[in-house]
Image (cartoon, rainbow, N blue to C red; front, side, top):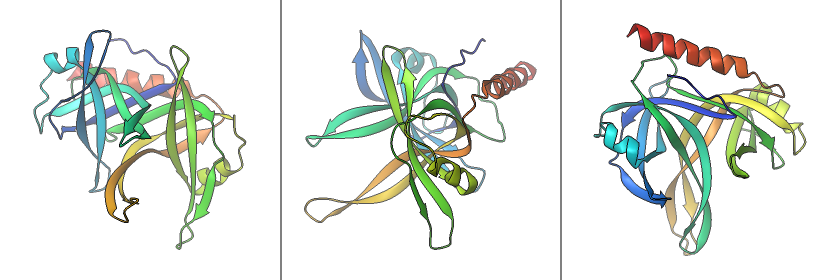
Amino acid sequence: MSFEFDNNRVYLFGKVASKPEFSHEVYGEEFYDINLKVDRLSSQFDLIPVTISDRLVKSNNLDIGQELAVIGQFRSYNKMINEKSRLLLTVFAREIIEPIQLQNSNIIELTGYLCKEPIYRTTPFKREICDCLIAVNRAYNKSDYLPCITWGRNARFVSGLAVGEKLYLTGRIQSRVYQKRLEDDQVEDRIAYEVSVSKVSREDNLQSVIKYYEKLESKKAVN
């Protein structure tokens, strides 16, 4: 198997947590959404939305609880919900491979551009955090707008950058539940998705991505 290396690469390994649900159709090809339960290194887990083509749905076992390894891209799109446009995020599965148990089952590598002023803050326990939005170019003059969160030294670094800076990031995709207050004063639980950044720099360290997937392939060959 050969890997195409680009500016948006995701590897996930987890368990199917929902049945495939029809999402949309493009040029006669249908796409379905599932949730993938991906364990963290701690006892917690992330519930990550994955979009899969009908071709992959038919050729793979997607029963709930089934282990699944996905290679794809983290993408964003706008969808009208209750007459309001919302930015939705999903992992677009480009390939499903044989599950391989690695120490880190949630890896994302991005090269993109800082497209919004970063927001720096500290927690009551003095932990430094910086939120940023990264625009990652896609084919056909499209871009994905991906929220990212950085911590500590990375937060200080990103907080000093100007909009338009080209960045290379590695980390994981995380989910978190938050409460949204609606117009009628009701509170609704929602799930937010973002990239929790472990490394960020101005340099494109693509060779580390290549080495990782070469290691992935070698482990698969042994198995």
